Length: 195
Ligand code: GTP
Ligand code: MG
Image (cartoon, rainbow, N blue to C red; front, side):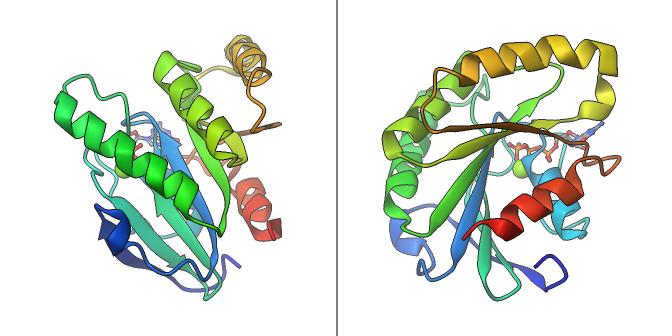
């Protein structure tokens, strides 16, 4: 699957701009700066595909990428950006709810969690929304290269404990580093086996 062509299709700010749901779809959610765009770049092997930057909140639109001719990868705007105006946050929450309940072909949401920080209250809000929308989600730990292995276990325990409360959570965590490539082949195969 990941040997196929990947292209940026479009950025969407409202439901009526969404492409037809005629392909299998996975989306990537997570706090601003957690590494969503970098992960999409690593998965597809294309450095500049999804814009990755140091500026939090840079990805404001729901970005659709085509993968081979069978899948969409969807980069969701980051949440939890401290300086975002209330009106922007509310608009985003509305669109996110519509997106999660309106895409029949959405097979799994990957919720990215920074290995240094673990699950924060804003992550739990998204997870509760995914529960309500009955979208199976799987946690992908990012930036694993920034945390020593001995220290990772403590965070992973916190993550597992929080996930146990979410019925839509898939229990297996994926540790990744987009920088080093760790966990990328595993995540590719997880996506490729979804039906
Ligand atoms: P928004 O679009 O603003 O929500 O951010 P994002 O979640 O798309 O994060 P992005 O991929 O832009 O990455 C944010 C910063 O983290 C960038 O400076 C990346 O280079 C860095 N980063 C992302 N993944 C990794 C990783 O695995 N390891 C390290 N060390 N840095 C990473
Ligand atoms: Mg981004």
